Amino acid sequence: YLHKNSLSGKVPRLDQLTALTKMIVRQNNLTGSLPSFEHLTQIKYLDLSWNHFSGSVPSLEMLTKVEYLHLNNNVLNFSLPSFDSLTQALDIRLNNNSISGSVPSLEMLTQVHVLYLAHNLFNGSLPSFDSLTQAVDIRLNDNHISGHVPSFDALTRLENLGLQRNMILGRLS
Image (cartoon, rainbow, N blue to C red; front, side, top):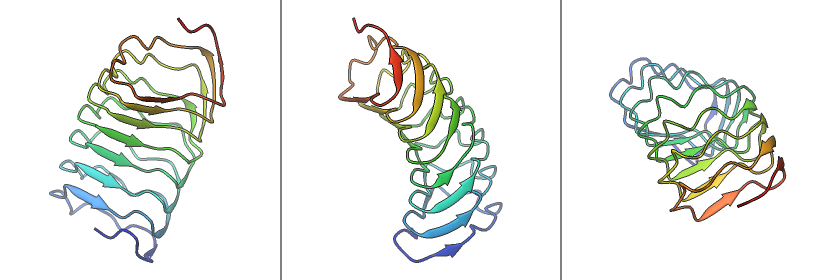
C-alpha cells in the first residue's frame, strides 16, 4: 500500500512482481505511461487511480484474476482494450480519463458489480448489457455515446444507472 503519499515520477517495471496480489498506489503524483501488466498474473486488486498517468492502457489479457481494476482519474487517452480476460472482475473504474472509441463488449463481465466508464470520450452505440446480471452500479454518463437504449431486462440487481449527457435515442420499455 503506497496510496496517499507524495510519490512522483514513473512506476518502475513490474516484471519481478509475479506473486503480487494487491497494488494500491492511488492518490499520488505519478506520471508517464502505465507499466506493463504482463507479469501481474496473480493480481486481484490493482489501483493506480488519482495520479497523472497518460497514454494508453497496456493489454489487460494477463489480468485473469483481477477483481478490482481502478485506473480512474488519470489522463489516459486511448481506445479501450478488450475486457474478455476480466472474467473475475467485480469492480472496474476507468472513469474521468479521456478514453475514446467504442465501449468494448461487456459479455465476459458476468461477475461485475460496479462498472464506471463515465466522463470519457466514448462514442458509438452501447454494447449489450445482458451479461451484467450481477451489476448494481453502472456509469456511462458524460460521453459521446449514441444509438438506441439497450435492454436492461437482465439487470435485476441494478441500483444505479448513469447514462445522462450522451446522445442516446429511443424508447424505454
